[in-house]
Length: 229
Image 1 (cartoon, rainbow, N blue to C red):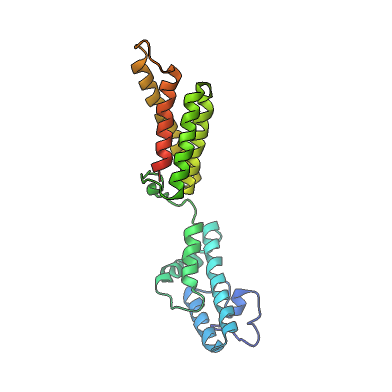
Image 2: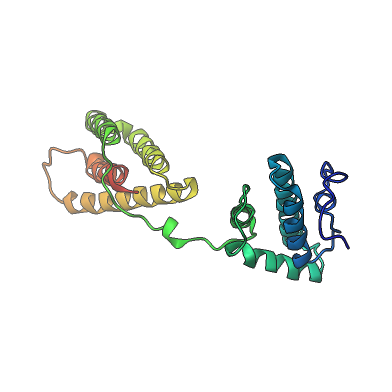
């Protein structure tokens, strides 16, 4: 089995295995040796070295896809694992193949474990232009709520959408942002119901009972837009 590539005959081949001068079932050591031998044969030719590195990357990515699809043989699985373990010790080159393989593996591994930190909320006041925009929009929404109690549903719906957009703009994933938006509106409605129940027995209040329930919910949503990260 060849361990290097004949630059004069196969360097232009589109098949990465042919370009490296190895067979498709070559072991990890053979792949590594073929790469090193080919790079030495290429000398200082940047185009030839780039083609070799491209072929080497293609072999690694092909092994990774085969392992994920379950079509790779047991021998190739062992070689592929060795390839993965070598990413921290692989020699540097003009094309960083080990870094490329690591990024691909992190993006494409099936059923990755979700990081709980991406779901847990953290609170930090938004700053700059974002703070000004949120305060202006929040003030307009509150005035609309007070001036038109019949528009409570519309104002709360728009506020929930605004909280969702605010989280997405601050870097939270859309699904997480949606979940926390619904959680905040539910919390606000519960708080509004409690406030409404507390004042329900008191006569002569200058406030509309609907507002007593809607305003706390709206303020919770506004606080989420200002703080939730």
